[in-house]
Amino acid sequence: MLPKFAIRLTLFYLFLGITWILGSDRLVQSFTDDPQTLSLLQNYKGLFFILVTACSLFLLTKHEEQKRKAIIERLNNALKQAEIASKLKVSFLANISHEIRTPLNAIKGFSQILQTAEIEPETMKEYPHIINKNTDILLQILEIVLEASKLQAETITPDFRKINLSYWLKKNLIDFNKSNSFRLILKTPDPFLDTLPQLNSDPAILSRCLYLLTNGMKRFINSKEINLNVFYKNSENIISLCFSGFYDYDRLSKMADFFQPFNSINERLPNEDFSIGNELYMAKRYGELLQASFYTKTQDNIITFCIDLPILT
Image 1: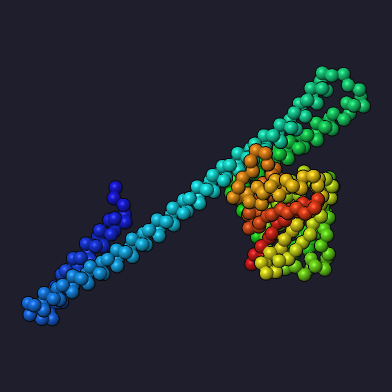
Image 2: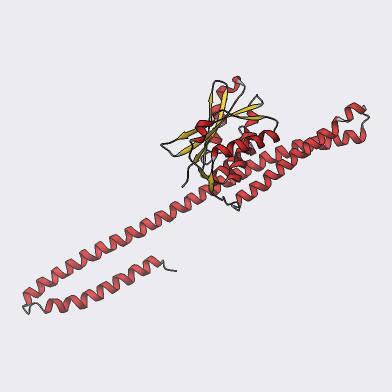
């Protein structure tokens, strides 16, 4: 099957040539009857035709080449994104399989002990609590799997609305600290928060993003507290939420490389030795829905996770 461009180009050239020959001959003959002058005008006419068709062919082929390059670039980008999504899915499933196996082994092991072993009554009281705790962990992991499938299928659509960040943060901190074993402490003073412009975002997705971010972060810190600082980057029209906590100073030399996959998850993927964890992966996927960007930084024995939220109009 002939390419459409080849057919269009042939028809264009055919139409232009026939029109030029029939029209230009009559036009030249209307100027003079002298054979020598007619011959000279015919030469000029031919040269002009060659110049016009050459320029037309150049412009047409240039236009088609630009279209072809644009299509190839889109296909390459789509292929790259598909490869990244595929590798992220493999990494995510590998993390999930490991995290599912841990509570399952605990549930199975303690259930078998309760059935077969002779245990002191005081010790036995602890085992149902351990089983229930691991069951809750397993349910949380399954919720993350369902969320990941929705994000992968792009069925979650943000509902952007105006948010008073000062009020929203204080309310979410109260709810957060009630339902978690560690505390989230807002370090930014109220007068500064009250001066911040309203944020155009989805409050439900933002809440889920920050919940997953802090829960993913807690595995890397030693303390039971996470500090939250809010910054306003006026020149970039961005509000930055930074979560920081203390971690083992002996790991400082490795931290920058360890979190590189999180800082550039769309460019380089975590390998088998450095897994960023499912919570951080999910937090970043939710953040992408809000057009947010993430980064980490380490200083002394403090690690900070930041999310930059654009003030969308």
